[in-house]
Amino acid sequence: MHWESEPKRKACAVNTQSFSDIREGVRRLCAQFPGEYWQKCDRTRSYPAEFVQRLTDEGWLSILIPERYGGYGLGIGAACAVMEEIHRSGCNGGAAHAQMYVMGTLLKHGSEEQKEKYLPGIARGALRLQAFGVTEPGSGTDTTRIKTFAKRDGDVYRVSGQKIWISRAEHSDLMILLVRTTAREEVSKPSDGMSVLLVDMRQAVGNGLTIRPIRTMLNHATTELFFDDLEVPVENRLGEEGKGFRYILSGMNAERILIASECIGDARFFIDKAVAYANEREVFGRTIATNQGVQFPIARAQVQTHAAALAVNDAAELYDADEPCGSEANMAKLLASEASWAAADTCVQTHGGFGFAEEFDVERKFRETRLYQVAPISTNLILSHVGTHVLGMPKSF
Ligand SMILES: Cc1cc2nc3c(=O)[nH]c(=O)nc-3n(C[C@H](O)[C@H](O)[C@H](O)COP(=O)(O)OP(=O)(O)OC[C@H]3O[C@@H](n4cnc5c(N)ncnc54)[C@H](O)[C@@H]3O)c2cc1C
Image (tube, rainbow, N blue to C red):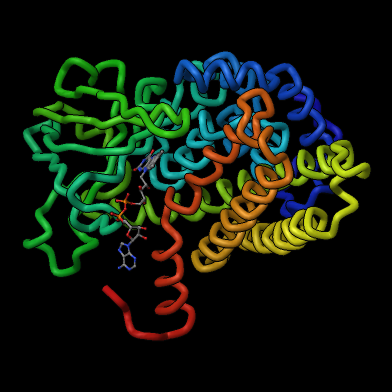
């Protein structure tokens, strides 16, 4: 890493001026992974292992891990700067982002023994914590209806069930897994009775866990998981039995803020590309940027991105100050994912036919950034949260 001059503090601001050393270091790394690298991974649907390894080796993924466990102990604002620069450079942080926010569940809710056991290895790059198993085919966004069940049997839980869309499961040594330990019908509140287990994938695969990759419109290494009587030691449970939903929710704020900063990076990538192409491409004897019909949509994308970046900044500041930030994290993610999508659409339009050509990277990023209006939480669910929790209107489900 090359940002020693930055004071080691819980810094907050996420605008483009802040964390300049971090941004410069990440940009330098990303420059070694140009479009051709990502095009090849995309074409062959292969995991960008070399890129993730470099991020790990240079310490960027352990930025949030406290210094006493070998990390850098910085705040989420610094982590946002890393993710934004990765995306602005045309790379894809989706291959590695989970390590940042998943680690928070272990850090906040794990025992001291568990933290000592895992965090130094994660900070060193000896252990990969990249998988986060929540979504199930039968429950969708309604997480309280998950069915994957962990039945206590002495010192172990026996896990059976199924998960879907679990990304990076084949490229992770550990997975944070949400399970039911008491059936929904037997608890007073639907969000009770769920627990979080830390699954060692190296032991689990072939011994009760089967992973099946899902091919999608973007290269995201996502999978389906099948649990058939998988043994997980009770000592691998994070926090109290039955309280897992709360633990997962606190990690989700970090996830939303970090993914929002990826969207800001994507939006800036598209705007940079659109401006450069519009200034260079000549049609009817003048550059296309001269036409307001071309220039204004790009300018609008810039305005949208600026506003969304301020919202991300606000959420990150609250998160780093340990203030409640659920609504702000959700709103930032909604604004940022819409800004990146508007910028993506404008960028394709500006490029005309070349917007569809693989070698321009625009079509790849277009597919990649579309994800963020659906995952990790879809736009409607954010609007529902704002309608009920911020504005006090009736719950719609
Ligand atoms: C590439 C990819 C990677 C992913 N990675 C992970 C991962 O690593 N770990 C993990 O746990 N999950 C992961 N997910 C899952 C992701 O979080 C979910 O797809 C997302 O939360 C939406 O859930 P769903 O697909 O079940 O949609 P559903 O819940 O079935 O919803 C479908 C649509 O209906 C809308 N809808 C549903 N209910 C309402 C309502 N009451 N009012 C209005 N609209 C409603 C939703 O907004 C959505 O647009 C991933 C998904 C994808 C596609």
